[in-house]
Amino acid sequence: MGRENLVFDLFLTFVQNDTGFTLNLEYLEDLFDAQEAQGILNGFERILAFLLEKNDRPLMPALPDLGFPPVADLRILSTFTADPLQSGMTYWAARLRWSLRATFSGYGQILQEFLNPSSDLHNQRTGIAAVLIRLSDLAQGPREQAEQKRSDPVMLEQARLRRDEIVTVLGSQAQNLSAPIMVVRCADGPALEADPEWQRFVVESCQALQALAIHHSSISFVDEPTAASPPPVVDGFDAVQLREGHIPYSEAGFARLGNIEIGRASCRERV
Image (cartoon, rainbow, N blue to C red; front, top):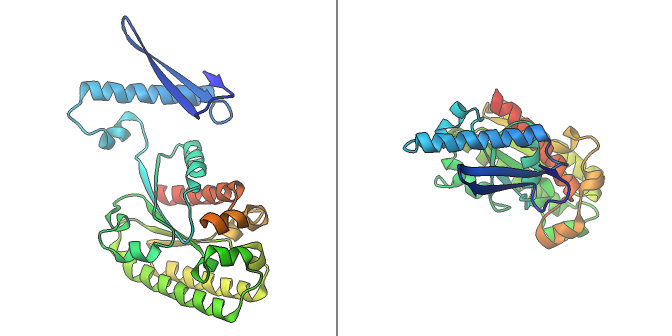
């Protein structure tokens, strides 16, 4: 049953009757159509039948046999608060018929996850690890970035040192991970994106990250501002959210980034 004013994207109810239960699925018409909703119900019925008939077998390994794609894990490490990516990635993954399970590390925890052998990243056996890097995060805190107009020598040197540290750690740890690594350079603020000195540093950094990907088959690199059209910095930057919660992008900016993430991750997962 399609509706325009649901509180949730999907709303499933069970109604008990004399012969068992009736399932009713309501859905937002902006996100799903009748065929997609029926497919969800059919899949749910297959899962229930499996549990009733073979309740001694784990469900997750049996999903491909039931007609579901394997669940793909996406571990996201970032220099900023990336949690708002979840809704956009979930939407695009559903459109691609790709089953997604995304988990996020705290922002600024890239090196810790790579260097700690007991981290969630090292324990990941399937899926992809996405490393999202805003180069300005390597040199300044969110409040300074929100007010930044131009780069300066101290900022550039600090960002260069931390970038080199990340490149070194990723290169040394890539062979110790089961999951491939997708490194994404994300847009800085409009002022820095228009600063010629900072842009020279960006080009230098992209070359270093691309070289890392060339030397390690398990690493790929995406320069997100040049992969999106129009560039996300035009309408995707949010200085207020950056200053208050280290969330650098608007809803539109995160939606565009999530589109690129899922598209690249889906292609790599299917290779």
